[in-house]
Amino acid sequence: MVFRSVWTACTLAVFFSVGSPAQSTTPSSQQTPATPAPQNSNGQTPSTTPNAAPPKLQLQDLPPDSHTLTPAEQQQQKQEEAMNAAIRLASLQAHWGPQMTTAGLSLTMNEVTRTKTAEGTQITYRLTGSGFSQTDKLMLVRWSLDAQAKVLMGGIGFDVGGAAVCNDTPGADALASAASNLSAASNLSAAPAPSGTAKTANAQPAFTPPPSCATMMKPGQLVEIETTAAPGEAIRVALVTADRKRAAETSAIPFPMANEDKGCRLQVILSVKDAGLVLVDGTGFPANMLLKLVASAGGASHELHARSSADGRIVIPLLTGEQGKSSGQTTVKFAGINREPTLDTPKEEATPNPECAPAVSYPWGEGSYKVQ
Image (cartoon, rainbow, N blue to C red):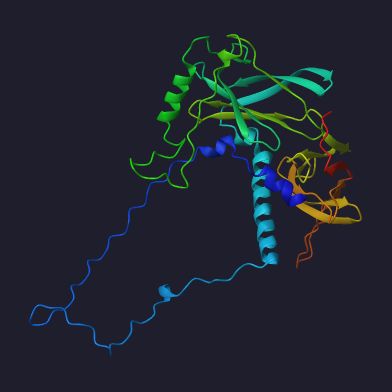
């Protein structure tokens, strides 16, 4: 279950990752002119004698290794690839927000309403920001669980109070403007292949500009995010300039799976819907210390280790599951400072364990994702 869910989530083509510069074609190596064959007195090329020594076998002439991976090796390779994909996904999610926001920009989600419906609690957010230019036409991006980051619309700006609004007018050629800005940015897509040649496998797909906000909103209308969510689900949005060179990101967790004890707080954030991969986020711990947590599921448990930041925060990706089970419950608890063994006896007393002991439990597996 664990690796299947990670593979599902890691088919993401995250919006911000498609902006890599195009790779130039490597020129072919110059070929050394062939040496003309020797000729006899009649100007004819002599035939090869049957006793001529065969050419020596060079290392590069050896056939490739024909070893076929065993089923066990294939499974191990798949698990390693899934683990690497999970780490990449968790890293993107953990850094979403101020850490990935362009310097000088900021974006905040402000909850305005919650309404109970048959489909779950409908939550409405509005966006406020700073640092953008008054002439910026921004694109709204939403990154949902188990889905690609999607550009919802363009033409967004800010009013005098800093609230995000539709900044386009009906009939404005927003698409042409966005397309012009995109084509002028050389780092957005691969260069077109020369006429008559096939596109390379690494060529990035062309970016399609989103529809203008004016096609679905009135000019000056506030931008709102309406959504439902499950416990531990983060709502992630961003505003990006049309050339995709500047962006501000933010997120909110409407229904936190968290617990706090004496100033220390642990929360679990879903990375995929079935909680096969989660982020364990902790705050309020001793700064710059190697900490120990324990994750328990069923009758098994294992330790997690992470060094806290200068502000006492930790973020740990955790793969969830039990052998032979499709669902279950996991509990993560703080277990104190990890005492690293040293050869020297410390001259001063070791830092004492904090008195707090927060623990948080969450469901995983089939049927665990339930909108509140």
